[in-house]
Image (cartoon, rainbow, N blue to C red; front, top):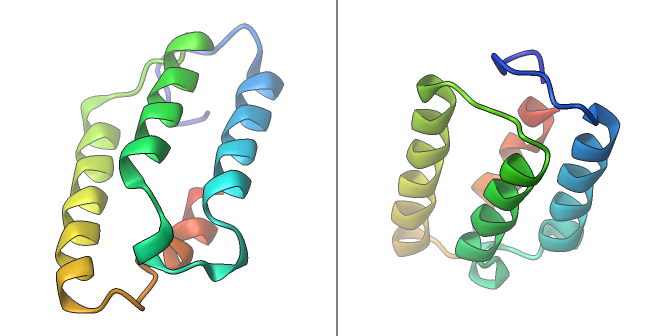
Amino acid sequence: MRHSSHMTPDPNGFKTSIENIMKRHMTNKMGLKNVNLTAVMKEFYSALIHYKVQQDSAFINVVLSVLLIEGLGRNLDVKDDILQDIIPYLR
């Protein structure tokens, strides 16, 4: 939330929503082959819209870069789990 230029009226609801998305899609080190990044990003951006959180372009560039790296990573080694590695940095 501190990277957003606009504070949501319900910051706790937004945080809970993001935690639920992460738990639903990133549990038990499932590996990249079992993670549907399109679904994760759709839910993430739906939460941004629902809670009226505006992100700056730098954040959007990071997200797009992660998606690009994930796509390349899947082609290199589907057992590698880059998303699991970046979760500590998202907190």
